Length: 112
Image 1 (cartoon, rainbow, N blue to C red):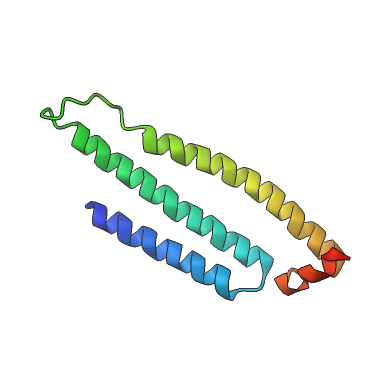
Image 2 (spheres, rainbow, N blue to C red):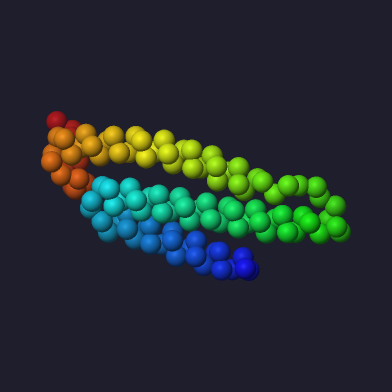
C-alpha cells in the first residue's frame, strides 16, 4: 500500500479527534478523542518507519538498519498513553464523585 493511503487515514483520524475534543463537553468522549489522535500519530510513525526500511533496503544507499525505530517510538507512546489513561480516568472518577456529572463545564466547581 502506498504511503499516501496511510497519511490520508492518519489525517482523517487526527481530524476526527481534534473535532471531538473541540466540540464535545463529556470528559470521557474528550479523553477518547485524545487517544484517537495519539493512534493517528502512531499510524504515521509505523508507516514512515516501514517506508524508511524500504528505502534502506536499497543496496545503493548501503545503510544497515532494521527499521524498528518507528515501532520503538510507538511502543513508548503506548506506554505513556496507558499512564495517561490511568491518571485521566482517576480524575474523571473523582470529578464524577464530586459533581455527579462528567461535563467539563462543571470543572470550575472543583476549585472550591
